[in-house]
Image (cartoon, rainbow, N blue to C red):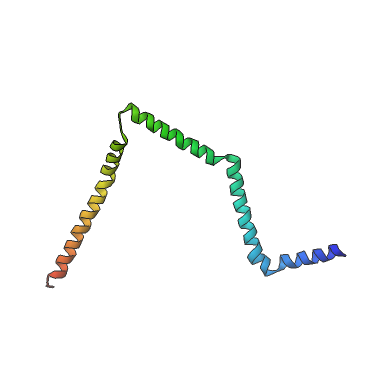
Length: 109
């Protein structure tokens, strides 16, 4: 008798809109999150990514020491590479604003 009542209750829950609209998406989200973290734990990608990052930094440090390159030299190079587009953008914006102000101040012909 209890088994029949439990089966009837389970059947009513499965057929209800609450189950379809609320419980299924929540269960799907929990399953997706669990499988993601489970895969990450099994693969240990966090540790391997950290090891790869440290190895790259050590190689960079070794290359800098071999080539007598300092951090200041790298910062100067970065400034040169990133600074030019910024300066060009400022010059273009300044030119565009001056053209707009010239057009706005001249009478229509």
